[in-house]
Length: 248
Image 1 (tube, rainbow, N blue to C red):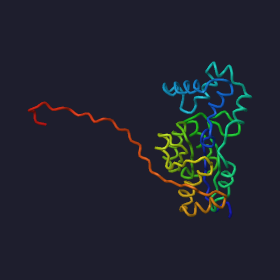
Image 2 (cartoon, rainbow, N blue to C red):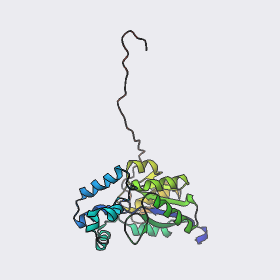
Image 3 (cartoon, rainbow, N blue to C red):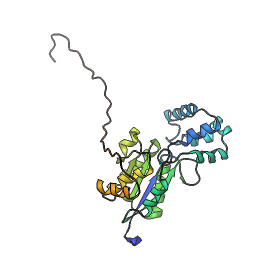
Image 4 (cartoon, one colour):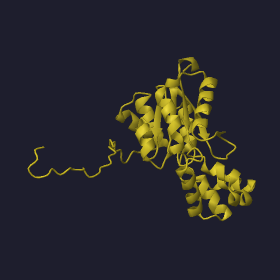
């Protein structure tokens, strides 16, 4: 098919725990001998006082925390990259997005606040929005042709931005705030699972066609549960007693 007849989309994804099973902050802490509980404590403390944008805790610690600054070296960052456990079939996901869906072409970009040289790096939160806008301008596509997948708090600003401009957002975790914002949520230990909402929403395929497509690439869907989740917080009702003999 001629490239001019293809529908072009940008598929952008977060990195930590979206395409991996590990968070780079935990891996780095383990390498340099800092207890993971200490990393959690410091990250939670920064989040509590809104010291940094959510998702940027590790970058802040590397720059300003005495313990991290004194211990972390460049070789440790490279070692983090080696130890991060990626989800299965990221390469195949890239291949399918590139030319494996008839009538469509998806440019696959990774937007991350992590200190990795092979991906597009940005400050968490609004920094990711700026990078996404830059990628859109470079590709010369409309905002409604942007798909963003993420898993955590640092993806909230991006998802709100994409949704407001008629793009499509996918949550790959049940993190409450992200799941509320994303237009679809898909869970699985294989990177290929993010294709399911794309094939359904963007390509307009029905379940049998999605199953057949995945089977053609060697994947059998063993379980496929689509459940709408209602998030509720209940508190005891406050009742006011009425003195005897007084009409309500």
